[in-house]
Length: 316
Image 1 (cartoon, rainbow, N blue to C red):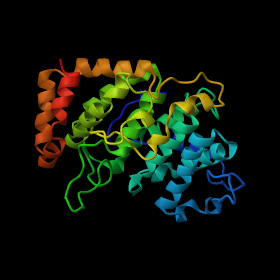
Image 2: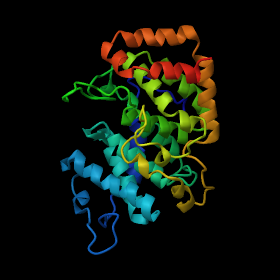
Image 3: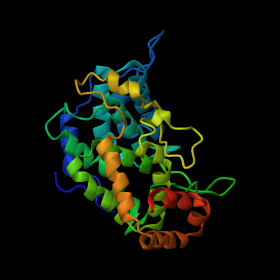
Image 4: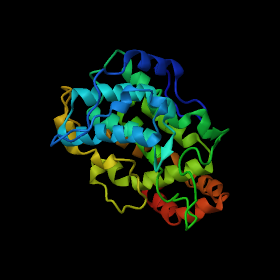
C-alpha cells in the first residue's frame, strides 16, 4: 500500500472500490434481523435496487448486523450481507439521518472484525478497505480546499432551538474514522497518517481533534478498553452510532482464529498516538491552533473549557 495519509480531497480510492464490488456479490437469500424468537423479519428489500432505499432503511440493516453480531456472535448471513452492503454503500457513506451512514458501516466492520483482518476474504482486502472506508473523511465533497465543507461532514447544522452545533463533542463520522484507522492501519503506516491528521489547518477540523483527544483520553491511557465501557454522559463524547455494542465479548466470540484483542485500539497504536501528541504540541504550535479556532466564534464558545483540558493532558 502507498503511504496512507489523510489529505483533503484525496478520499476513496476508485480502483479499490471496484475490487470490493467485484468480489462481494449480492447473496441470494435475504438477510434476517437479530431476533430468533417467533417470526423473524427478513430484509427482502435488500434484494432489490439499493439506490431506491432510504438512508434510514440502510442504517436499519447495518444496525442488525452490528448489534446481532455483538449479541449472538458471528453468523455467515450477516458476514455475507455486510460485505455486499459495504461495497455498494461506500459512495453513500456521507448520507445522514441523525447519524452518518459511515458510522454504521464502521461499527458493523468492527463487530465482524474485532481482532483484525488477518483472515482476509481476498488478498489485499485490508488495503482496499483502508483506502475506501478508512479514507472517506477526505472525500472531495467534504472539503472546500483546506476547510471542511460545512454541513456535509462533521457537525452538520445548528438548526435547533438552542442554535448550537455541539462542537464540544466529537462528530460520529470523525470519531469512528479515527478509531477505524488506529485499529486496522499497519504499525509502519501509523505515524505518517497521524502527522497528516495534525497537518490539516481547518479550524473546524482542529476543534474536532482537540475534542476527540480529550474525550478519548481514557482509551488512550489504557484505563478503558472498549467503547461499551465509556460513560454515556461523557464530555466530550466520542461515541458514534451503535459504538456501545463494541465490547470485550466480541473479541472472545470471534471465529476467525485470531488471538482475542484485549482492547479496541492495539497498545502500540495508542502509545504511538500519545507520544506523537506530546512531541508535536509545543506551546507555540498549540497557540497557533487556538488562534485559528478563535477566528470562528461559535467554535471557541462551544469548546469552552475543553482546550484547557487538552493542554493539561498533552502539553508539558
